[in-house]
Image 1 (cartoon, rainbow, N blue to C red):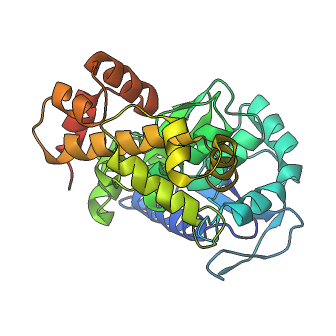
Image 2 (cartoon, rainbow, N blue to C red):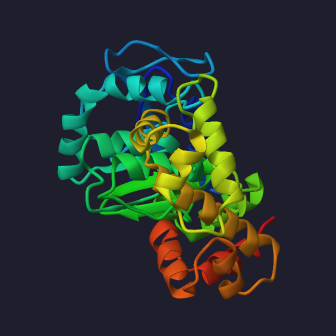
Length: 336
């Protein structure tokens, strides 16, 4: 039986999630046919659909011709949402998501009808905007973890994972994770032998299941594509120099020579977080670097970031990254 996949495409989507995935499905079909003298039913078929049925220009300028409008025609076996480009800043990213609001009800309908839905890269935000990730597990590109958590705290993020499946909803890590998604689908619908053959032939690392080895110690915040505020720069420098001490909003405001209310407002406007949470993030970034690059004990690492009680540090780390510090260190030992 042929598994049909609908690519829902829209302006500023990432073309690789469509063209790259289609190439992999095409190769899987050819491999499944190889060795058979009579034609066999294709393992996969696919089509491209947009909101108006017209061609769409991807974020890189690639023109994606479409087969029809989204929501018209028989229900597919799987809907794939390509990620939206985030490089133009969070303001542009939010605007692009708002343009997709007409899809939210249809996504909910498709999911209720047991259609699988796969969200590639930043498209997890689209699923969350539609309310489909409430009280469910998901992953996102590691550098969007903070932004996602701020917007959708009711979703259990498993950002360490490259791919997460929960009740018919698939989410992936960053752009090239479509390779893992394709392997997952071929394994599910074509079997282990075909999936292994495809992975071997196309150099897909099917064992690459974690984003942790790729996480950088400096978190990225694609705020609004404007020069960073001078107050935020000074605040980060001060917080970095005082990571061994407990966070104090009063002390930070005094150093910046502004009111506590001003500090809170500026962090909310520019980073969509609070000063305390930002200070905590900086401390955890140092902890992650020390776990990756040193053999320091957890007690020593906790002290270096201002936690006298290492058990409190362990709880915070697990709550933030859905794994223990020891598990993080073990996973990062496999870095390629």
